[in-house]
Image 1 (tube, rainbow, N blue to C red):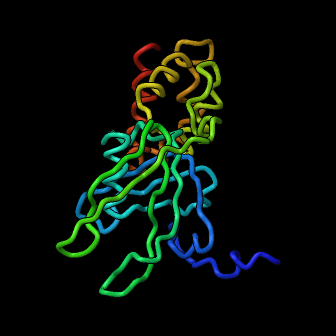
Image 2: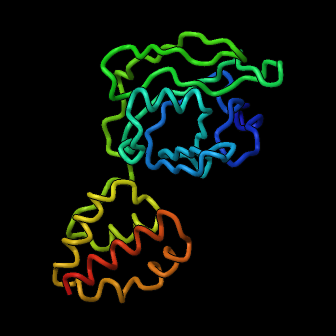
Amino acid sequence: MSDLMQAIAPKSDQLNADDLIGTEKTITITEVRVQDAGADQPVSIFYAGDNGKPYKPCKSMARVMVQAWGSDSAKYAGRSMTLFRDPNVTFGGMKVGGIRISQMSHIDRDLVMALTASKGKRAMYTVKPLRNAPTKPAPDSPPSVTDGEGIVYQIGKRVFANVGEWSIAANKIAEGPNGAAFVTKYAALLDAMEAAGGSDEFAARTVRNLIKGVE
């Protein structure tokens, strides 16, 4: 191993500022999960190649995303942004570094807004358009409406981000020649998803209800 970045990478379940020492990372979002506002880090942004380490933005960067893309995080899948380590981010009066957003896709001009820089102080923050955003669809885009195996695989990966599109796909499969056997064939997977709760449970129940309605 000759890459020192691998040797100094912190052990964590999320992307850390120290992962970006000496570099930046452009990510393409696959899924956004939002917990209760009372959680320490309520937003988890999963992206292509995240290796199970999502980006969990601070409140300031979450506000940037809302300002740029709106509050409906279900629409974020497939969009991209560039992350970097800002060494001037402080915690407890010490400079510890933090992750910041420098560029975002789906904006056509510089985004300038006032963010909290320190207690009682605000500063202007600028995000630039990401001109060379990846054009390849996010890997969890809805599969072909004729691909029953595809939709089950994707649902199993917990990427039920766009309920409307997934519902259309599931409905088309249900109406096809193999629709009647769909729920039976994948009963174990759907049972596991319902037991998991949250978006998984909602996805499984939606698929079952759609298919039941056209049987």
